[in-house]
Amino acid sequence: MHDELKIKPGMRVGVIGLGVTGRAMVRYCLGLGAELFVSDNRSAEQLVADEAELLENSRLQWEAGGHTLEFLQQADMVVASPGIPQDHNVILGLTRLGIPVVGELAVAAPSLSMKVVAVTGTNGKTTVTALIGEILAQAGINVFVGGNIGTPLVQYLHEGGNAEVMVLELSSFQLLMAGTFAPQVAVLLNITPDHIDRHGSLEEYAAAKMRVFANQKAADTAIINGDDPLCVQLADKITSNCLKFGTSGDQKQYAAQIKGNEIWLLGAENKECYDLAGTVLANKIGAQNAAAAILAVKSLGLTHDQIMAGLRSFTPAPHRLQQVTEHRGVLYVDDSKATNTGAAIAALEQLSGKAVLIAGGREKGEDYSMLKAAIRDKAKDVVLIGEAAEKMKTSFNGAVPLHMATTMADAVRKATQLAKAGDTVLLSPACASFDMFNSYGHRGQVFSEEVLRLVAEQSAGKMHDGGENDAN
Image (tube, rainbow, N blue to C red; front, side):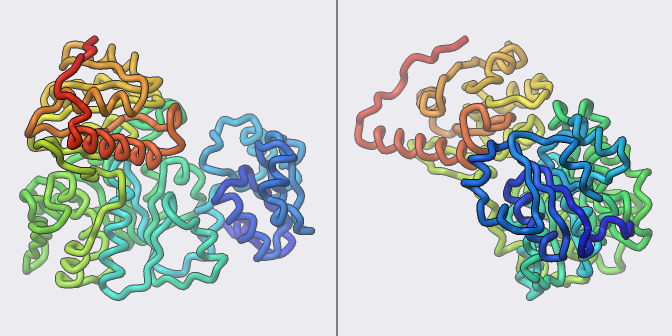
């Protein structure tokens, strides 16, 4: 472990970005006796108005209106927000000066004495992280669930958290600056194109994801998706104990086999079966998520009964294939968390009938033509919104009828008019939300509100059936 990254009294620590995690980082470092150099994009007036109490600390200096090398080079080490690109000129300048630029994981690593489970992947990581946490909690284990979701890790440590196990959802950006962070259990769910605008290529994005295994010891556990070609291709680089899950029945290669809604653990003298019937995980994607979670908690010593109790009690977080309502035989589903093509494809594949898909938003450099086959197979119409609408229109041309909408209310109304009994109106955008909304949660909330408003109008007879399709 690199001792120079451990926060000590008198150490000079720079913090770039005073968001939720940045504020937690400042308090954590101050609590360990460090001197702080805080750099933020907000104007001086706004920063003081927002963060006055924190900025008044005598061991803290700050700059506003952007990040400068002149200010940050005073630090022995700089902690950057995951939102700061690694090719930012200040990051490059600090690196040239030999000043370590790290993320939250690298700073926290020296203080992690408990077992750590790290979950990454393009899609499903929030669900699997929460599922592992739920199984452990139901087994009576003191667990902290965080990372890329919920409470910042350093905030939990600063407040004296004493979890027996930490379950952390990790993004590719966090892993790029993870330093010596080494989880005892690391899970890679899948790799499909995402954040290519930041990483530059799929290869670089995949390399960032693979860093979750980089510092593991031989006795640690690596869990990967054996049905994902890129994960399998990269598996040879893993030096820890690698377990695969998937639909293959090859006992020499797989530790967990998915058979419909059953998960079979292989290789043991007595094979174990986990039946997902009656749980929210009883579907294609749910079974994949469950298989990964079962392997993770099994490696921590949980029993079959303990694991089944957690599987049965689990409820997924909002905006992940969440049913809003059913009206006149049409199911309305909020999958606003689907911010990339892989997530949207996965959502479409789970549907039993046909979908009227609402897609679009702020693009992240993806190839939307990857969605075309799934749309042709599972959708009857697509309603497009947001900045990516025109690019998607070109990519989806010829698959199904395409319809343009200007707002979420417009999109929901058009989708409702197009849907018939047995169909699903599915919001699965395959894009970020920031062109029209504050977050994917805000986008999902607006979708749900518009759906319930239209259902109320229909029930009151205010909205006639049918209408113009506005096909393009």
